[in-house]
Length: 120
Image (cartoon, one colour):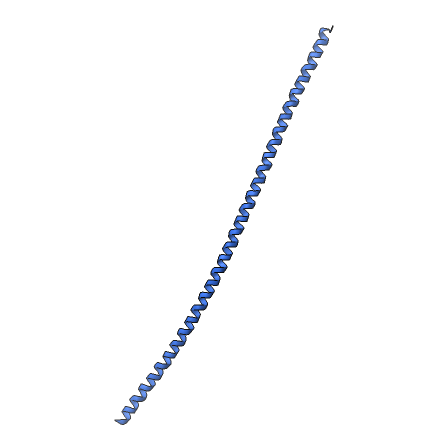
């Protein structure tokens, strides 16, 4: 038979073991929560990086599309400028031709007036 002292020692040891088991279980659960929180944080960071990458690709695509539109519009403006320049040159030539015709006509009128004066 165990003495009261020995029984008390066994009970204290059993109590300490139960306390240690409970503490170990609590630490294990806490560690598991920490790992889960860390995994969630890593997943959230990875999702944020993926979203940032997607947004960056979207912005780059938009910039490339804008550049292409600008180039197309630039070519269209250049083409229109060329057409307008050709039209301007044609109008300038027509104006010069008409100015020469007017000058020639004025000269003819002056010569005709001189002839008429000479006859008088």
